[in-house]
Image (cartoon, rainbow, N blue to C red; front, top):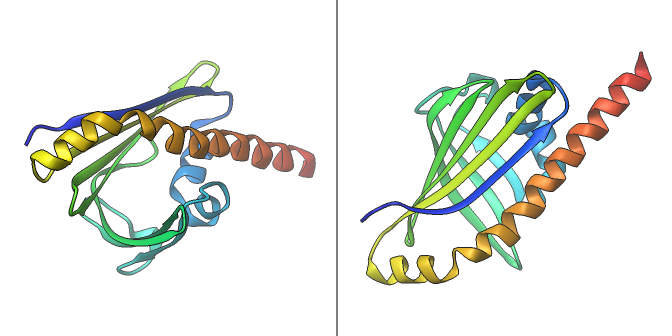
Length: 157
């Protein structure tokens, strides 16, 4: 089936790309800003992540807890990462792009789904608007968290 683009988030974050990347990729930060992720379980150490690495993510969405196998299909820190998960609905792909700008960092997220069958294709087409509601909150939390971390660091100096 054809890939369906479901969501895009883009924002200028007025801080350096290294801090944005660290807060996006390190669980010590992710678990503080992402209210859906309970834990990520890695094959080995989180520091050993690379393209092709797999992990299990436990997430709570609503009242249900999901355990999904994730895979880094591209991993080029600090600029780029693509994570894929496969469920009965299909193959979900989340792409993270960080671009250095004169003002800080441009942060882009793209989410798409390759439906497993025509029913999930129809459901995805009908309800892809709902991705915005779920993801916007998480990425707004992310940006707010980065500014909190930056503020704490500047007060220590």
